[in-house]
Image 1 (cartoon, rainbow, N blue to C red):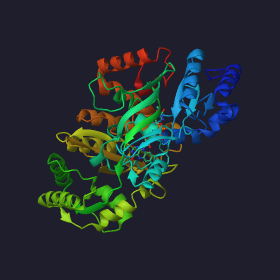
Image 2: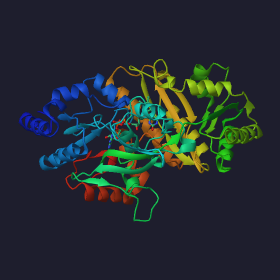
Image 3: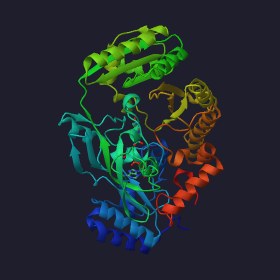
Length: 485
Ligand SMILES: Cc1cc2nc3c(=O)[nH]c(=O)nc-3n(C[C@H](O)[C@H](O)[C@H](O)COP(=O)(O)OP(=O)(O)OC[C@H]3O[C@@H](n4cnc5c(N)ncnc54)[C@H](O)[C@@H]3O)c2cc1C
């Protein structure tokens, strides 16, 4: 029996109708569409695709180049009652961009124009499909920068970063993506074009922009966004410290943040991550929990003064001062961690759990989550676990435990069960420790089952009511974010 939701005749009609909107050359049918777009970069998607059990099951792929085309496709999807899944760079690691319920995969990479640069206000309106790295290069040529640098900058789109509520390496100073945004242009689930107020601080009712950020394609397709820019920084000051105990590093970070200091980079690695990840790149003989710090800005004297205050706090907490070099080397090599030989590949099993909590809970979250991950796995699988605290706020921090099993069970079901058990136990441990189950990778297929634990019944009902109100035919990413309508 076929497991497809559309039969061949319906797919042929869908492909033809999409061709009328974007041109036949910008549409792929089911076979070609599935071949080209196998899924996002999560282990879930990659391992399933390698087993010919692809999670992204689109019936067609359409590649629009204008907002009007996106709106027309969405109206068609409503007429035919077929799902629509926006696809940016496909660099997500939670399975969010998979068209798991079939229908139309909307490739947004053709939405890649700069619409307006305002060098006076330092803002830019850019289309949602623009690749972050290319956007940054375009700005740098003009002496400007975006300051949102996810490690996936080479693949991630600006719209995808907003949709997943992402974070960049300089977030401790410049904020998560939601703090970079002034306004958005969005195609609603019924095919209308919505433009939110031009600035984010106002008193004209609720802040719709923020409702749409993090909605992972369930409430709107982000076709353009106006972001704030910065001038390219004139000065960067680096520092590296090691701590006898991880807790001392956490306390140093807390004091830095609660004293109103704003280092652009504050990364604290536990002993495992220091030895097996950071040290591999910086080659400085690091063993104890290590912190890399960087302050930046336009006025060198202010940057240096801020860095000195951060360094003083680290020393007060017993931090051993290793100078600028290791941190500088980390900065130069900061992307190597995401490519081979650092990045895991099949037949490994891997995943990152990024959870966030306030300062009263973050240390407990670290211990509970890492303990749960270790205990979830039989020692025979040689689990490796490296954790760092990489994005800090005035009120707390996040932990980024990255696990890898070099070679898991050869049976796919067993490998999947092992992966899911680690994720399950770690997520439950995070909740028990008072943490929020994700900081910046989003929910996707991986964390959807835990949304009810996170929000409770009333929270899920509220999300479902918003979804139902905006998307009466439930065409945008049905079932995603764990929302049942
Ligand atoms: C090696 C590696 C390193 C990473 N490092 C980071 C990091 O440092 N920081 C970080 O935040 N993330 C990181 N990620 C995760 C990923 O890059 C981010 O989640 C990123 O925001 C996804 O952008 P994308 O364009 O690839 O989106 P996709 O993966 O294509 O989609 C992600 C979600 O957004 C939806 N979506 C995409 N575009 C739109 C749009 N225009 N409108 C509405 N919905 C849309 C999709 O349907 C899906 O739900 C990393 C991933 C990898 C593989």
